[in-house]
Length: 165
Image 1 (cartoon, rainbow, N blue to C red):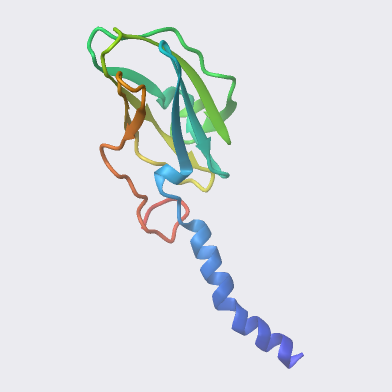
Image 2 (cartoon, rainbow, N blue to C red; image 1 turned 135 degrees about the vertical axis):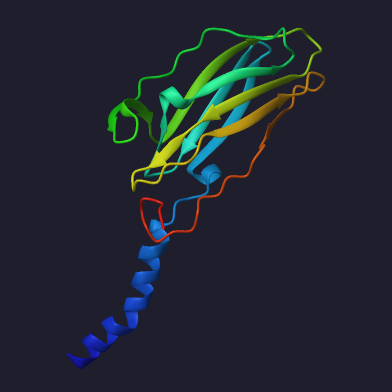
């Protein structure tokens, strides 16, 4: 019996450390992994892999052209999501696990494209990230894509699942 008590006392710091790690929110790019693929000259497949325990808000996802100014985003639709009564934003549609949006884009051949992708999400533990902006660049010459990160956003270190110290 004494051995059992000693074992639990020795293991307690390890359990505490694991519990503290689970309270730390993931970096935003790990929580919401953004991908883009050029499917045709006039269509982009924008997708997110969403970490377990996290979700994206539909109403916080926006696409806008940076350049060229004459480029246009066509009609696109979001897939069905999950209804959530959010304590911050009220009734919302959210996405868990993954999200895929096909975005029709029209721009002149030979022109490079820069597209702003904005989104916001939270963890089920109660931590909400500030809005995130990414820039998708498409090189017209070789059709390569790159996702630029204007600001690296890291969650604050905290012991609270709600993100406050």
